[in-house]
Image 1 (tube, rainbow, N blue to C red):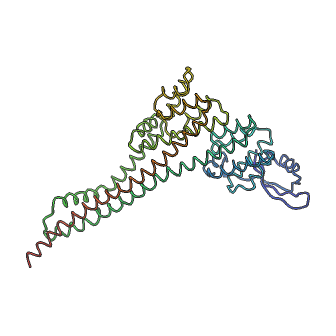
Image 2: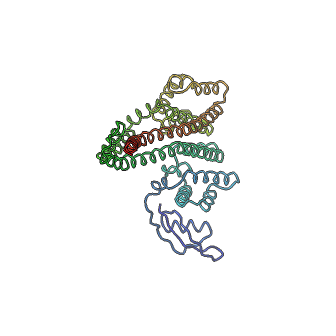
Length: 405
């Protein structure tokens, strides 16, 4: 199918312009006729690339949340799915998402299901979204499933914002401190050191060490920068491999503070995802298939989820499977066991998700609050040593001048 721009006349004689997806101009003419429009002319729209490949990087999650909310509302009002999509395409401000909606509408007109039509855009709609859409279609609960998806995406965005806040501020402060120290050690101290040597002042040991560090930095700063970049690039490439990512994520969980934060994020995602999919009616095998496929953000824990499902297949209960697989905290296992016993598994996972979500936010706040005084102490210590290395020889100079006069 191709995207065609067209000019047409409605029943009142008014010229209408727009774009539509059709196999050819004759097909477009028939589609417009059904809408009470008479085609005047049309032409193929040149695409910048495959929309299914390009749209994923251009459509913000907030736009998808708005789309799901509006789509659910139109269906709840009793409008047909095609009409709901058409109304969404009119009001959604994202042009890439408009084109995706129009393509979905075209696929539905050709007899596809909503799941199949949305499945043509894997870079826009994730596997979890598609699975819940399918269950909504099959169960007749599509509006509820769309609202659940919107709630879930909003939670993911809030969590992503929390993670960004935990990483951007420390990185910015460290970068600023590195720059200031580089200026002092690389430029200011050498100038002061040269002046002291010319005056014949005896250089204290601490000043000699700082000046030697300055000389080393001046001689090797390029190698140090390229070495740091190479080290970061090597880590990045390593964690891109399957085994490398597994090892990296496994040992990341053992890092103080950061490991606890990463684990809480993974457990929050596990709980929220499980509750959302279970509410939509997805089967346990499908739920575990999604959970073990790059959803938790930690490959080691995703492998433990896969191990949990193998335990489940051997006849263990869900709580026993999580416990035997290892890597999951007793609180999470206990919540799952309580949900199984009381028949409220979905509510238990929701409670666990809310708990770990709160733990993530508390961990971020604690990390930032601990980072600020630590940075101040580090900055004060470094500058104290630098100032001391300058003041000691200057003090000797002033003492010498006082004795002279």
